[in-house]
Length: 362
Ligand SMILES: Cc1cc2nc3c(=O)[nH]c(=O)nc-3n(C[C@H](O)[C@H](O)[C@H](O)COP(=O)(O)O)c2cc1C
Image (cartoon, rainbow, N blue to C red; front, side, top):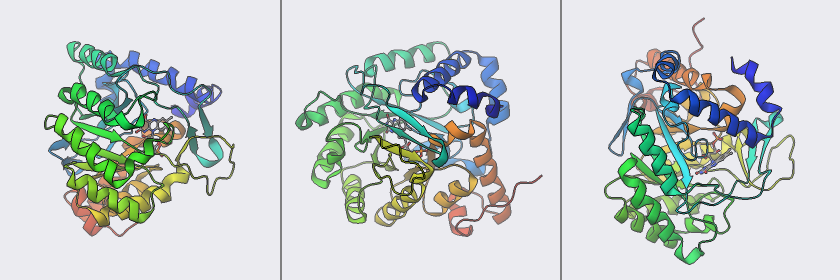
């Protein structure tokens, strides 16, 4: 089905195609019968796929990465499409337009995207009003919902923590977790917040304001091993409940076609970096890790689980493969659970040889 729609979407500017898709999904999301029909096709509810992390129960490991639904416009649809969670955002305290367009480009030869969006956001209050409307319509998702926190571009670096705290305080009652985004390459100075000293104080401040909602920290793939390990240890000491790794990369290594555009690169060229970051972080901490970056099928999903990921997220591969990808990943993991006899993904980590996934049953 997606193969039929994709050429029309790819004929549009990438951000327009995204807006059209989320707009359409937002309409579809309003209908309970349609959601149930989609869930019948895409949802995989196998108790072995369940993940319990930072006090939250996830019905399946693959979730929606931040940036796909920045404001919760299609909030109820993601569970119906088979995702086991959704991270909304990045949400900033006040509305802001983000960087000038065009700011998203597809790289089909590399199955990648470069985005320089710079947190276009309606602001936290508008996002929460939308959450309220979904709840009042009886359409609040039955999968966990996270909120990814950011700072406004105009906020001076020295008061960045105030922005994160504002969004955290307001969003905490709605969120199953809050994610501190200190890794977007498109807001000047933001990644400097990954430095150990600054990161400690920022995380501790947000944890204090989060009212017991778990706080995760989203790191970038461009930290060297030492800096990533230090960040993991600092985040843990400051009371965070987990890590998300990784955001997009500013590197351009290995691209077949580099369009020479600024921004963060996502998709397949990020795969090895994200996997390496996961290994580094897993060696540095026992905190739950959400692995994201270039996951595009069951093999890569399994590789991340085996390398120590507790949960997975994806975005760019959906642009190329459509929503059926999520069920394919979950089916692949179920086959691997069958093959190994593991009763959970954690057990699979011990039993599955890295890189192996059973062939699909025909
Ligand atoms: C168009 C676009 C917008 C994004 N916006 C955000 C964002 O607002 N906040 C954030 O934390 N990550 C954002 N990301 C990064 C993704 O959440 C994810 O970390 C990254 O794309 C790697 O995963 P992928 O290779 O599966 O896309 C964005 C990615 C893309 C492609």
